Image (cartoon, rainbow, N blue to C red; front, side, top):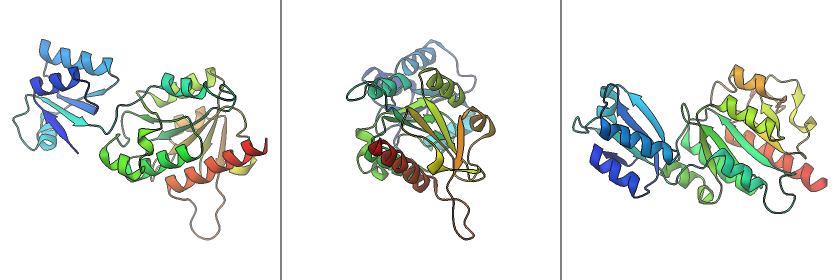
Length: 247
């Protein structure tokens, strides 16, 4: 992953509009120059994290970073408002909004594959949390086979709060969980809907699961109980496509 180090270099890149996945600042590093970087980053919807200096040393592969390390992104993150605006334009004007929410997908290849599938299924955007999730890196861009350039991906501070905002905007939230009794084919995807998928290994976190209006599963045959998250996303998204075309 490309990285930029040093106060002056990072500030200049921010002012030039360069896309960053996140900016890491050493804990305890406080002065007006660092505050300016934090302000610029937040104005541009770039995640800022405060980490131990040793973590920055490892990221920069050097101790000569002045307590500031920026990790480059393949594209700038969108906002939830960008995605809702995309869903409210064109035919239907929001009547068939389709959004994918990812609860901690950390493998960049999985994230890229989901973005590609979401675009093919006509989704209006993907939402990921700032922490415990893959960033919008070059690896994700390659895995998406170009889809990252066409589909807005929003990074949010609090996924549960974002789910509540989507409910207020008229969306039904359908979570995927291998232990759910209801099959994914029994859910209705013809209204504005957000499909919520858990991360590798842990699946949906409990708070996320509780915020879903419905929780469904993918019935499997044989000893394998669950599918790779990118495969599961494809199955559910194209069930939504099937139902919407039928309607």
